Amino acid sequence: MNAELEATPEAVARHYDHITRFYEIVGSRSLHFGYWPRGDEGSSLGEAQQRFTDFLIGQLGVRKGQRVLDAGCGIGEPAIQLARSTGCEVEGITISPRQAAQAERWARLLGTSGQTAFRCADAMALPFPAESFDAAWAIESIFHMPDRATVLREAARVLRPGGRLVIADIVVTETATPEERAFLHRALLARSLITAETYPAIVRGAGFDVEQVLDVSGNVMATLGAVAVGIEEKGEEVRRAYGEAFLAGMKSEWARVTNVASRGMGYVVLTAHRR
Ligand code: SAH
Image (tube, rainbow, N blue to C red; front, top):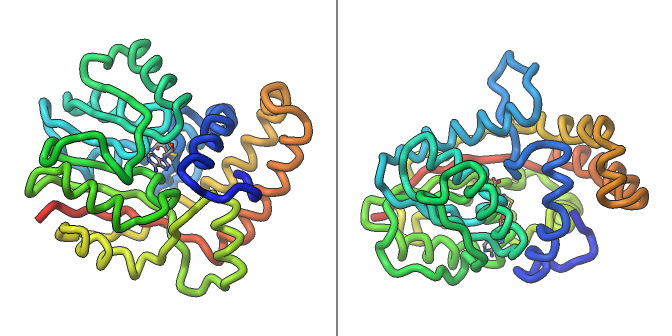
């Protein structure tokens, strides 16, 4: 998180070059929220993140040999899990050069290099030909991007007709105040937070038929508390990696995010296919 920078793609790239290690320390190599089924509050953040990836793999429904775009791939963990569990091929892009290099390294270490490829690129201008993918997903990446409609049109362009799209994204609630919205934009380095209610029309407008918009807020928001626990438990490691001032700043910033999120933040999983 960084309240000072404007969320240009360059600033988002610098942010992730810097912050990825923090999320690895307090969570796992999956840089997204965790998912806790009702009644199962016991699992760790890492377990819940893995479970959320598995859930999204189920939503995507791809088969062995199919080609999938991962738009905003982080350090590759979701793409690697997807490739391993389905036998598909994944092209991951991230705006952070450091993340792209790390994702390639993890793929080599984990033995998926034959199925996965990662590079630094902007999802607003995809370096792929038209109709070259069977499916695409974007996990907690679109809210960083300056223009959601452009990103979605780019996804539609590179998908074959009928190709599936899964989006996991942070949204703002309809009741969020302008101050809360402004705070969340700054704190999350977000460029384009919208409400769950306005999402389907934007996806339809980019050339998709929307299948489902699932509000999973109740299953994922425990992530915020889990990260706060992670900051306490792994404080020493965070301090070694980033220094005392970062640790103190992160603790107070995270408490503010958690407070505002309880009223102003939601989370959706949207599934669609290209018309
Ligand atoms: N989906 C990954 C990473 C989520 S973090 C995971 O679940 O682990 C957000 C990701 O979005 C980062 O990898 C960041 O580099 C990427 N991102 C943000 N803006 C982007 C853009 N304009 N083009 C491509 N990737 C972008």
